[in-house]
Image (cartoon, rainbow, N blue to C red; front, side, top):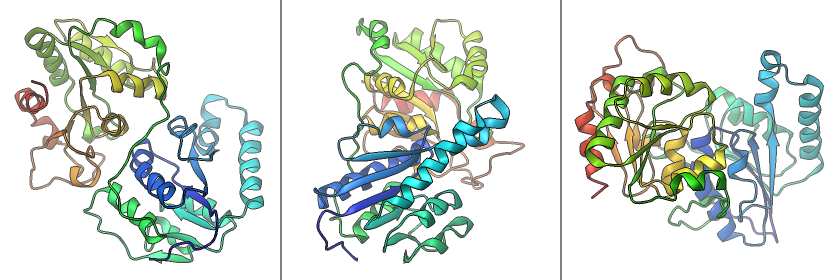
Length: 349
C-alpha cells in the first residue's frame, strides 16, 4: 500500500467504458472520497456513460472523451472538425493539469493513451493488462485474481493508494424529476412492474426471443404484472418480434429513454430480468432485484453485484467460454422459462 501523504490530492480516475464497468468503479470513487474528503477528483469517461457521472456528489469534475463519436463520424455524418477539436481540447486540458494520482482502472490501450498524456508523478494500475497498457504506468500492482468480481478488483486499486476497506457503495446522480416524462405511466402501482431487457452486445448472451415472449405472457396472465421491454435504438426490431409473438400486451420503450430515464425506470421497477449487459448492472446498482441470464460469461466475475439477485445458468462444461459467436449456444438456448420463473419466485412474494 502506498497512500498519498500530501494535502488535498488531485486525483484522476480513468475508466472510459462500458456502462457496467463504469458502474463497477463507483465504489472505488466512494472509497477515495471517504479517505480523501478534501481531494479534487476528476473522472475521465467516454460519452455513453457520462450521464451517470455528471453531477455525482463524490466527483468534482467529469471530463468526457468523444472517442466513440470520432469512430462513428465516417458512418453517420458527424462533424469531423468538431469531434477532432473536442478531442484536442481534452488533450490540452489533460496536459495543462497536474495530478498527484492517476488511476488507470480500464487497463486497455484506449485508457493508456490518456494516462500517458496525463502529468502526474504516480500513474497506478495493474501489471500485465491487455494491449500493453501497463507500460505507461510507473506503479504496477500484481495482477488481481481474475475470478474475483470486478467491483473488488477495482476497489483494490483504491486500497493500494490508501483507501480503507469498505462495503461497496453505489450512488447515482438521480433526482425526483429525472425521467419525469415516464411518471404518468406508473401512477397506477396496483400491479408490480417488471422490466425485461432481452438484448446484449454478444449474440451468445441472448436468450431466444420466443422464450422472452412466453415469459412475458405468463407474467401478465398468471402474475397480473405490468411488463415493459427496454433496449437501445438498435434493439427495436428484436423487441418488436418478441411482442409480435405475445398474446398479451407489453410496453416497448426501446430507444425511447435516455440513460438517466432508463435508470429512473429501473428504480421504479419491482424486478428486472436481463441478459448479461450494462442495464443489468444499472438495475443492481439502484437496488432493484435482478434475475440475470448467464451463458458464455462468468457471473462471479461480472454478475449483478449485491444481495437479493438471482442468476440463472446451466453450468455446462463449456461455460464460461467468453466467445461472442457459437454455432450451438446451448448454454442460453437450454434455459427454460420455468427456470426463470422459479428464480423470480425467489424474489417476488
